[in-house]
Length: 232
Figure (cartoon, rainbow, N blue to C red):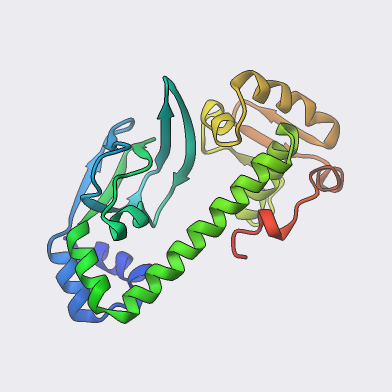
């Protein structure tokens, strides 16, 4: 593996506290692979053979049931998935596929579990990562259960703006059909919600979003750090 890749992985919170010899050991069995768009990386129900690290591109986490599917989340660089299944040696609860050309590092789950058992710094980092994932899951559940579809879209626009340093115009980096699924909406509901946001100063044309009246949008969306702050 290229030294540049190793440096990027080493700086992830998950691996930063790991002892040098343990980091080298777990990386010896790892490998990097580039995948084209729409390639299945893991399947729901399969055994968790690898911990994945997204270095470039983006990956959709999704689940299916009785012919229906839903988007659970989007993973972007540089971050891991799915850590809980790796640590528990349990089946994947979600599937994953690339949304664009992506570079993925795969670390054998058995090696990760071995290091977890003997490296306290790494074990603490795993707990912190799982705690962060748990809190993100609770926030996502709260927005699905407590907000209308229009309120969910309004807050998503504010979150994406905040992630881009508060800009008032940006391009969506996820197609609308997948965004609708992520927000617990049908494609038809998404189309109606986009039109319904116009009176609150938001215009979405294609994948371009323009916030023309932020105070009106915030007054309607009522964002709260207990749902919308990714750092809390």
